[in-house]
Amino acid sequence: MAIPLVVSPHAAHATPEPRHLVILNAVDPYVPAFITLDRALRETIEARSQAQVEFFSETLDMHRFPRELLDDDMVALLEKKYRRLKVDVVLAITPIAVDFAQRHRDDIWPGATMVVDAVSVKSLARLALEPVVSGIPYVLAFERTLDLALRLKPNTRLIAIVSGSGPCCDYLGDLKQRLQQRSQDLEARYLVDLSLEETLAAVAELPEDAIVFFTALFRDSTGRPLVPRRVLEQLAEKASAPIFGVYGSQIGYGLTAGWIVPFDVQGRATGELIARLLAAEQTCG
Image (cartoon, rainbow, N blue to C red; front, top):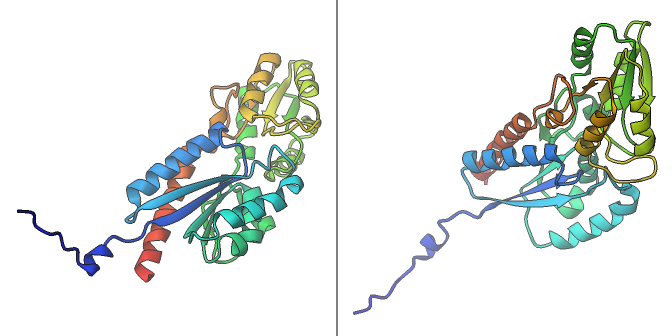
């Protein structure tokens, strides 16, 4: 005999609603650094969060393409997309995404808690974050990396800095400041805002007493979108000088050494922070 199933109205609401997290990324989602950070972030949140978390990924890609061409269209698209979805947390990755989220959060994700990642300590002052914004900034260890480079190659007389065009983190200005504080015996040559071909040619012509400091190169002077790690591999093929940098995702792809930012560690730390925020919101709710 069939037994009718009776569901209590209280039991039907026993399972809490999932929490919604938007990951707003300003770079190409297939950049190795972001893949490493994103994987560590998601694994940590899934392991530490008491509630079910649904992830939504949005890519602005405004490092490789001019933001002034994309901003209005992105806002219109995201407003339509999230019109009927309550978002609990928006994680903005890199300063460009943080700036976008601060300007448009109330229209796209009203009421969402904002968290920032992949933002240097120096960038925080420029961004003027609201007091309620959380995040774990990192320090780009330019000074330590320069010290390391000069210890490994003490006869260095020339430091060639390679960077691209378009908006990036504030690393270039910070690096210039560090180099100005150095001994007058060191010459700084800025291979910045050149085409990729010009950059490769300039690196190939460096003297024996030079080193290369590679920051990032998402776009060259011609407007060509690029992947920094692939650029680094090309530089390593051309350069006779050792290449130094501060990003962990570049180790093994042409970078000789550096005091690095480990993106897996950064992702785990941010994941733990978001899990705590979601737990606090659930308790308050």
